[in-house]
Length: 86
Image 1 (spheres, rainbow, N blue to C red):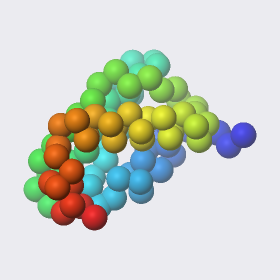
Image 2: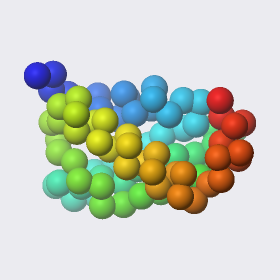
Image 3: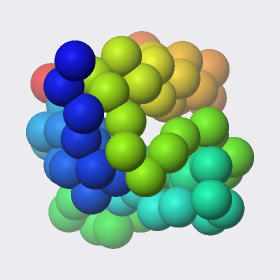
């Protein structure tokens, strides 16, 4: 099974959410804060704290985080607003 460190997992998430900006940071030993932002303005679209994670994760863990962020994003931003991102 492929394992990746937290920084590498964040890079995968940056690629996934491009062209939106993505930042991820550990806020506790087993959770993270994820922030999606507009690259042009720097404006935060959504920030989610307390997402379960680890310093080393497998691909399924990263996919679970991506799905959680997407679900939160869809709950707060109408789909027609996201069309500008691609």
